[in-house]
Each structure stands twice: as structure tokens, then as C-alpha cells.
Length: 396
Image (cartoon, rainbow, N blue to C red; front, side, top):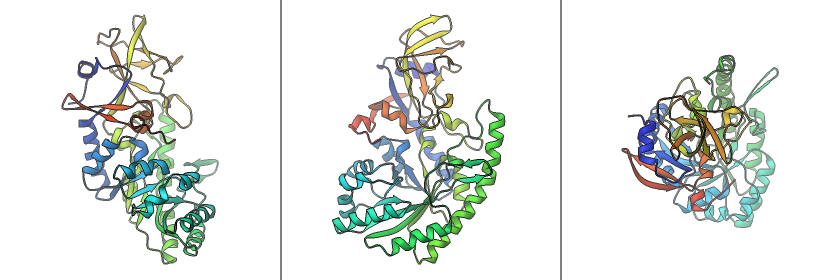
């Protein structure tokens, strides 16, 4: 049964606010939905979208197809390795953290850690470290999957590697460099995986995005196939080819060359992920802010709540009221650091001290604001799960 304002208020209304929570029944349903969508292809977990060790373990304990994690920093990889995680792909290039964090020692000890590269400077830097530590280091080459059309750059600006020729050159450099072993290739199609195409009230923009996605998907598949052929022509047999994200699972798993997809946000299903046409997951994670003022008949002012997501600034990056259904932010103030006014015209009787339940626009970033997630299962509070912050960690 889907939660209601009354069921959450009865259960959580006496907790000190603000607090964050995870509904494990909904979280587990998202796990099952992602299992079905993956259609048997391996799923690597994007830790950036979770940032809570017990929840990462819960996903991996669900079994196939979940296997391996993608971290967003070297220090995060070390933290999770000490928690027992293995098969760790660091999704972004690292520099000084590779020198000072102790990551190389972990790799020497047998942990399967793969570093991301996209240019020759990365290779030279890693080669120097491998020589200093007398070990061979695993690397993955990051391929840019953005699409370019006249006047439109459709995607994100990541790697300089776009063509088979550029990848071929990097492969030759790796092959001639001692202490560096190419084991994987990654191509993140952000314009498919991370861009909503069914956002409320944006019919014209949704139509444009869907049209561009339809053009981009076959182009991505063709480019990735050509890049993988260039790697194979160098005699390199990759352990994995990584692609995708929550919003592109179906199109990514259809590519025969892709061996695994990375999924993160779909386990939480934050507010931005309501805006996809072809799938819908459960809102499993949120936070609550306390009503402390009532400036007018249908307005309730809460303490705090201005937790804004990263990326291009806009109203869609603000948190959004979740329950009671129909509650809304006001345009003049939005979510504020010390107060957030909420307009609500519904039937629920809201009193001072009551919670308003909110959703963060993105996924794991919310965990940077809270030390723990109150865990709900079967309509009961069963635990409080520490976030990275709750374990004294901050990596970005």
C-alpha cells in the first residue's frame, strides 16, 4: 500500500525535525523493478546516488544482476573498500588523491580497483605511481557519448575521447606504458539517462528532448561499437564495457557490446525522476521539515528545508513537497535555509509541530545533509541507517 500523509505523520511525527527517511518496502520494490528492466545484464551500483553503506549492501545482497560499484572519488573508494566492498570502478579521474589517499596500497593488497582515464596525462601520472609502488594499476577509458547537432550540444562535457581514432591512440599509449593495464571502457549517455522527457507543464521541451533522444540513441550505439572495435583491433580484451544510467536502461542493455550498466538514482527515485515517459519507480527516500508558523489560512511555514540539488540552476532543482498531496512551494521564496513556506488547500488538518514530507530533486546528494536515514518497513520504524556524513565522511 502506498504511504499517505496520515500514515507517515502517525509513524514519524514525533521525530526531531528535520530528518531524512527511507521506506524500505518502496526501496525493495525499486530494486525489483531495476532487476526486471536490466533484462539479465549486469548492474553496477552508482554509489554517488546512495551514500549509505547499509543500503548499498542491501542492493548487492539482492543478488543478480547487481555486482560491483562505481564510486565518485578515490577517498570514497577507500572508505567503501574498508567496509568490504570490492570490484570498485572510480567513475571520475583522480589526481592528488591517488598520491595521498592510500588507494594504491589497497590495490596492491588485492582489491580490484579501476581508475578512470581519458587522456595521456592521466596515463603518465598513473604510470609514475605504479612505478613508485611497484605494482600494475587497472584503468578504464572514458568515452564521450554526447551528441552534437547544428547549434545544439546534446549531452555533458566529460571526456575528450569521441572517435575510434582518438581511442585507438590512447590504447596504443597504454599498451606501451609499463604498469598500466586497460581493463574497461565506459560511455555514459547522460542525455538519455539523466534528462527527463516528460516533465509536467513542459510539453514543447518534452517533445524536443524526445526527438533528440530518438536521434541520439542509434548514434550512441554506432559510436560505441566503432570504439570497441578500435580497442579490439589493438588486441585488447576488456573485462567490462560500462554504459547507461537509470533513465537509459532499456536502450543501453539493447547494445550487445555493453556488458554492464550503472544504476543509482532509480533506487531512491527522487523528484526529477518523475519526469520520464517510459518508466516510473517508487519515491523511497525523503525528508521532513517542521511546521512552526501559520502566516495565513492556507500557508504553513516550516523550519529549514532549502536543500537545493546541483546542476544548472532552476526551480526543478529545488526540493518539492511530497505529502500531504497537493502541497506546494511558493514561487517568491522556494525552499529556504531557515524557513520554507508551503501552500496547502487540502483536507488534512495541519498543526504547528506537524511534518511536511519533502522530496529532494536528485538522489544521494540529500544524504550530505543528514547523519542518518530513519528506516521504515512494514509500517514501522526498524532502524536508523548512517549516511556517509553520519560516519564522519565528506568526499566532495
